[in-house]
Image (cartoon, rainbow, N blue to C red; front, side):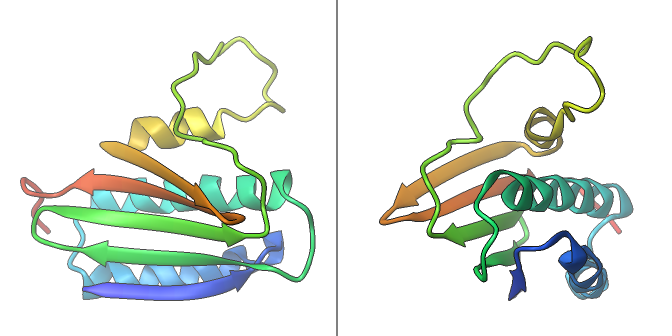
Amino acid sequence: MKKEQSFRKDLGALEEIFDFLEQFIPEAHLAEHLALRMQVAVEELFINAVKYTPQDDRTVKLRLEKTVECLTVSLQESGVMRFDSTRREEYDIREKLENRPGLHLVKQLGDRTHYHFAYGKSRIQLIFLTKNDHV
């Protein structure tokens, strides 16, 4: 099952994103713990997209795909500079709380992460393995 939608790059779009995710969860028969991991990861990735890229009229495309083996979450932006958020970097938990551990948290939530950049388009994929999940 696949579902895809574009959202304006604005924190005000978070409510629309949450609605999109809430529709997908029962349609894809996601287990509760998997749905929660996905929701937190999407929120963190979207906040980073808004916070660290130019504010303009562009959108962020969110794509969800559920198979028997995995759930793949993809977030794509256009007109951005290369920034591979999947790089493994150590995070000092003692840092001040205003420096949210968003990307570190996202890496911990998913089972695999992939990053692709070409021609001003950036796509991060977060893969959650589902073969042992039950609703």
